[in-house]
Length: 368
Image (cartoon, rainbow, N blue to C red; front, side):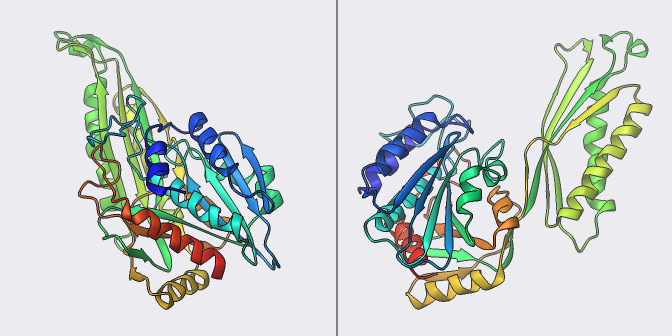
């Protein structure tokens, strides 16, 4: 398999969560070219399961890759830029899929001792594909005993991997808050209930949750990234909307933060004569690396000569956490040395990392 050619073909067709029709077909076409004696392939919505029968299995090892893109206009200048306007593989899922296909090609030609389950998961970026995929019939049938995944790391050099035991990524939740009051003419504010004012005040109030309602020894972030209200300069807004995110290092703190947001909303409804609705959108469970299997992985990598570094905890979110909640395993960072960061329209990971990534995943599947 030509890894660079494969990555570039996938890069051209980014699709959003549960819309990955072209991506799924391209993946299936490539899988169908591989020796099929030891493979069983099943689809689930826009995702794919590939079960590899081991030669003398005592367990099943799962490997998960994500396949969706982001709603972002590409700005890389690539000759193979996205063919889909407003869509881009800006989180490296084109890399992730290529590496999974490369490792699967090895497994198909030379089956490992243990069974392996490759999971091509849709909708990682939203609305979340890991949790429903866990409940699928193929997952129940081939449920792994341990599972792992990788994510590209633009800030790390090629030929470097990084992970840690315990918490790697935070609990995350989207946050959408809608305000409904009474609009009116700007000259008669006493006859209206201004939702621009209500939303603006709520933005300042919500910051007190982390400052005054969360234990300083815990970590939490509440960010409002978007405010929308009003139509023209001389009409008092009848509605407004806040959009943001919540991130915590523990599940209990996440619930505490949400409870405090709801308390503030109830008080705001009374003080501003309005109604408020809250939608938490997609929620991702923390990525928590099981200690024993993570230790075995890092020891194996060092023994095989890979540059393996200790990772810092991050407030980023990844719905692979739902799989790790039920199946012991780990996630690791793969260095790709890009000046632009994840989710940026100019992300350009170095393609030399593809072969390195395939080698790491292959060696882990053969020896874990």
